[in-house]
Amino acid sequence: MNCVHLTTGSKNTTFLSMVKKIRFKIPSPLALAIILSFTVYALALIFTKPSSNDTPYPLQLLDFYQRGFWDLLAFSMQMMLILVLGNVLALTPFFQRIIQVLLNKITSHATAILFTAFFSLLLGLFNWGLGLIFSALLARAIGGHARKSGMKLNYPLLVAAAYTGMMVWHGGFSGSAPLKVAESGHFLQDKIGVIPVSETLLSSLNLGLNGFLLMVIPLSLVLISRWKKSSIMLADELPEINFSDLKPSRRQYTGFALGLALVVMAVYQFFQQGISALNINLINLMLLALGLLLYKNLHDFMKAVNMAIVSSSGIMIQFPIYAGIMGLMNYSGLAAIFTQSLVSVSSASTLPVMGFISAAVVNFFVPSGGGQWAVQGPILMDAALQLGASVPKTIMALAYGDELTNMIQPFWAIPLLAITGVKARSILPYTFIIMLVGGMSMAVFLMVF
Image 1 (cartoon, rainbow, N blue to C red):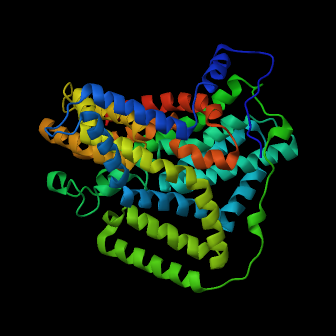
Image 2 (image 1 turned 180 degrees about the horizontal axis):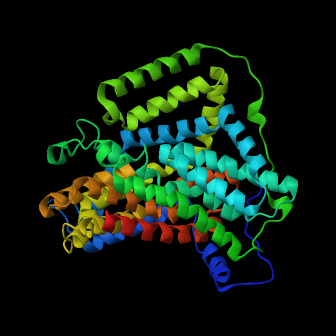
C-alpha cells in the first residue's frame, strides 16, 4: 500500500503550516537512532572524563558503545516476546471479530477517534504489545471502512490515536520498572528490597492517573479533529479493509494442551504468591498461553508469529543500537551527570517530579523502559533513600517520564506505521499535543498524590 499523507483544504492555519514544516525535518526511526548515537558520543566526549588507563578516550567511548550492544540481550528478548506475542494475540480470530463488531458502531470521524484511542489506552495498560498492534489493526480497518462507506476521515490523526497506548503502558501490567522491582533477586534488591505491584501499579496515584488519562486523551483527540475538519483523506488514499485471517481452519489440540498447561502454571503461581507473582516473564507466559488457546492449530499460530516478527523487525534491529547508546551513557557517566544535576536541586517532595522530567529526556535517547531503569534506577533510588522520598512513587515517576516521550520518539511506533502505511512525520504533530496534555496531567498527579 502506498504511504498515506495528510492533505488539507483551502483554509490554512498557523498550526497546520507548522505541521508541514516539521514533517520534512523528521528523519526515519533508524536514521534517528544513528543520529542519536553520534550525538550522545559527542556529549560524552565533551562532558565526561576518561578512566585511568592508556586507551585514548574516543576509543574508550566506542568500547562503551559496543559493551552496551550486548548488555540487554536477555531484556531485549523479553521485550521482543511481549511485542510479538501481543501482536499474535491481536491477530487472533477473537480480536479480529471484536474489530468487526466495533466497525458497526463507528458512524463518524469522532466515534472513530474515540474508539481507537480508548482501546489503545485500555489494552496498552494490559499489555503494550497487544494494545499497539490491536489499535493499529483497528485503525487500518476503520480506514478501509471509511473508504467503503465514504466517511470523512483524518487518517494520520486516527493512527496517532492508535499510538496513545504507548503513553500509559509503563503504568500498566507490562511496565518494565514496576515489574522488575517486584521480582525476587532484582539488581537493586539490596537497596530497596522487593516492591510489590500493590505499591506501584495498583497504587492510588497510578490508578487515579490512568483513569484520568483514559478520559482526557480521547476527548483531546476529538477536539483536535474538530479544530480542522478539512484535514481529511481522499477515499482512494485510505487502506482497503482485509479480514483474510478469518478463514475457517480445523481444530487441533497439541497447542491447546500446552496453552492449558501454561494457564494452570500461571494460576498456581498467583495462588502461591498473589499479585506479587506478576512480572515480565509471567506476562509473556500468559500471552503465549492465550495465543495457543485462541488459535485452532499450530499452523495458524505460527502464521501469526511470522506476521508479527515481520512487523517487529524494525524494533529488533534498532534495539542493539539504542542499547549501545544506553551503554555509552551509562559507562561514561553521562546519564549520571544529567540525572544528578536534577536530583541535586530536589527535595523529598520534589524528587518524583524531577525524576519524571529527567526520565522523559533520557527516554528520547534510550527508548527502553528496562534499559532506562538499568541506567537511572540506581541513581534515583539512591536519591530517594538519601532524601527520604517515597521509593514506589519515584519508581512510578521514572515510568511516567519513560512513557511520556514515546509520543515524539518513533522507535515503538515502527510496527504501527508498518501496519497502517503512515509515515512517522504525519502523526508526530498530533502525538506532540497529546504528550503535552499527558505530561501536565502526570506532573499534577505526582505533586498531589
